[in-house]
Amino acid sequence: MKVSISFLLHLVGFGMLFTTILAGFVIDRKFRGQTDYTMKLFTAQIARTIGLLSPFAAVLLLATGIGNIHNRYLDSSLSWYSEGWLVAKIILFAVSLLNGMIYGPRLTRNRTALVKSLSDHSAPPDAEQLLRSLNNQITLFYLVQTTLMLIILVLSVFGTGKHPGVI
Image (cartoon, rainbow, N blue to C red; front, side):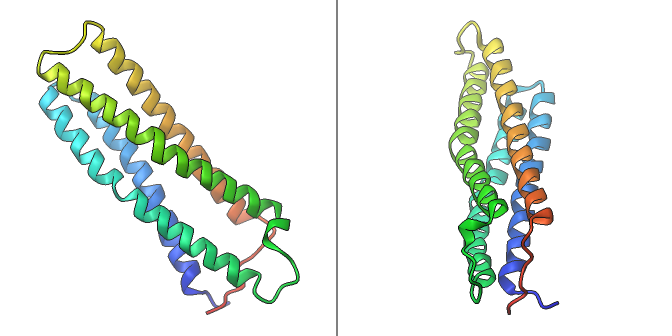
């Protein structure tokens, strides 16, 4: 079987996105383990740097996904929107993209600002409770992102369509 460059780059993009989610989760756990607020801020900066890779992975996935759809239906009488697994995969990717663009950065920004205020001793009286709440929300964010990525993976592997292998 021949494999297209678009398909290989799609796999690379998926790997990049999954790696950023996994690395973000691991760094989040390291963040929670820190007791010094200066180290928490340093760890948050590392997490932000890792998080900046996800838009590149998302753009790569989007571009190569469009290329794969084009390759798959180039000489076919079928239309892409008649394949339920593909439509579900596109919808889940869009939900994951919106979740990652809106909620993830907002939660981490709020948590970093709260830790800065704790470091400066200018935090509100319920800051520790707010920090726990933000930590729980970030855990939920990573759980949702991982679940969406795993469902997309299952749909890709066990969907009815196979890649045509156009080079």
